[in-house]
Image 1: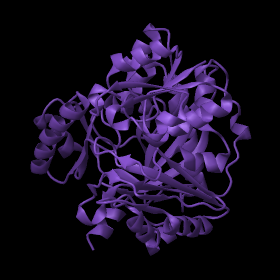
Image 2: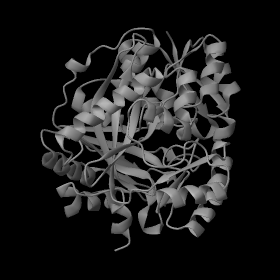
Image 3: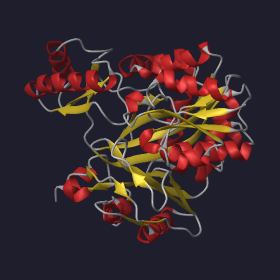
Length: 447
């Protein structure tokens, strides 16, 4: 097997490292902006696929397929983002005899329609929030649903992902406005303006369950991650296990996730996302049919290489472990270090990294696509690195994360990062107590 990694940055480096350990040759693809990027050096071969604009390089399917054919790559790992949840791309791969390392296209079709998957999961016995049965065709229909289920409501892009294409409405007038703006955004960004409506839970935890499935029908979960520390639906800090989650709710989430994945014939790695309210009631949100940005949190707890499991399943092999063999130990926290200025509305701050000195020490992992002297381009996501720590207890993990963040030096002309904000958030009493919800960061920033 030779794997082309159809991505960039830290996830491309991450996949390349596992492939090297498995003795699998790799091919990097890169845009003009990434000619000297770390992921290019991390692979055995590299192919230039286009200019900086993602739509003409990393999202341009003919160029990616041509790179695979030219280098003899017989499999493609899409990472996350870009083409990772594109069922049509997976079909094109199959049409050229290339293995797509991810779920089958028909499964991605099912779970990728976030309006339709609500009904599918309800049919599998999962609890779902009151809302539309599918896409909502007009503002009038949205207003009728709002009147039926009560306000506030949330409008979501059916083809959305990554926390984008989501808006809250607190009354009928705002709902009509939000409906129009969200459909326009969804059409522009995702190429599909369909939206759906469901009841909004204002004070909830965002909890996701890591799944693995294979072609034998085996589906297992590797516990949950808490992603409640987020701003505008963009995650800043993720941790596992979720603090203050009753054991009965924890057990039930795992069962729900496995049942839902089996219901659609899920294979490979993915996550089932839930909201958990103050009463401990969990409701299904969505399925992400790919490896997640925060997958290292689970890897540190479970001692399982999730990318290696993806490759095993794509090769037709069974998972390397059963549910009974899953053991989760200690606590892990991931902090996303972005080249953004929190003091200026989180404005991206691309530029040359004249200093890049990541932390080390026991229980510290840094996944990054950059090194000192590299340039953070303005063309892509602003993620510079993921700092992930493990410790025997949550209290120790918080202390270790703060120590590691204090050591993390990222500097350059015009470059600001989220490191100071991350340290401040970890020091808040609400986070230490584990009582924070998805609205905490917004509330904190408005103080």
